[in-house]
Image 1: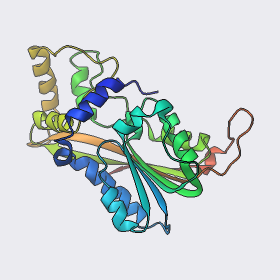
Image 2: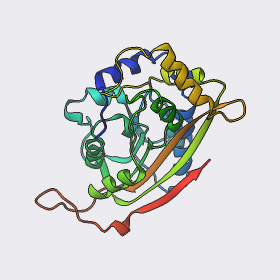
Image 3: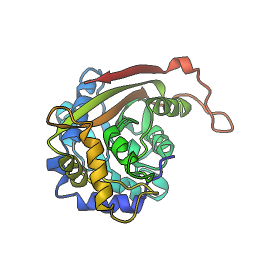
Image 4: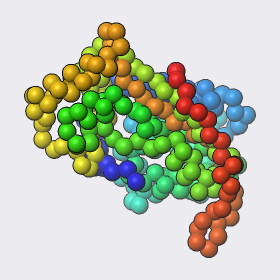
Length: 271
C-alpha cells in the first residue's frame, strides 16, 4: 500500500492546472512511447477508457490511432472522487484500457486494477505505465543526508505490478522497465517542474514545516556531487505493463491460481 495524503495531492493537482501542460515533458514522452506500443497491436477497439495521472493528455493521440472508437477519459482527480474508487463504467464494456501514470498515485493500486479488470472486455487489452522505485533517486539520496523524513514518494516495483496483474487473472501479463534521465540546468529547475506538474511530496509522513536554510544547503551540496558535467540528473524509472482481459474463473475465496512462469518480466533498460 502506498501512503499518500490524498487531500493534499488533490490540492496540488488543482494548483498545477495552469502550469501542467507546459511542464509535463516527461509525462508526454511516456505517453508517446505507450502509443508507439499500441501501433504494433492488431486491435480495433470500439470503446476505450483513458485513465490519466493528471490532465487527459493523450486522448487526441488515441483518436488519431482509433478514429472510430468512443473514448472516455478520467484523470486522477476524478478517480479519487469516485465512491469506493469505483469507475462509472459498465462491466466488460471496454476493448482497450490505457492507464498512464495513474498507478503510483493511488493508495490502493490493487483496487484500481480490480476496477480495470471489471470494465475490460475479456478479449480486450490493458496498457499501463507507472513510475518505478528508482524514480527521483538523486533527490532521495540527497535528502537522506539531511533528515529521516520522506521527501520522495514510495514507488512500486516492476515485479509487484506484474504479480498484481497475475493475482487478478489478467492474461499473459508482461512488464518491463525503462530509465529516462532528464538533465536539468539546476536543482531548482527540477523542483520547479515537479511543482508545475503537481508532483511534489504528498507523503502521509512528510515534513509539515519548511526545511531550515542550513539543511537545504546541505541537500544541495549532496546533489552537487551527483552533477553530470554542468547538469543535474533527474531519473524517472518507467514501468510499462500490458495484458489481456480476465477470462479465468475465481474460486470461492475470490482467488485465482496461476503459475509464476506465465508472466513475462523484462530487464531494466537505460534510455
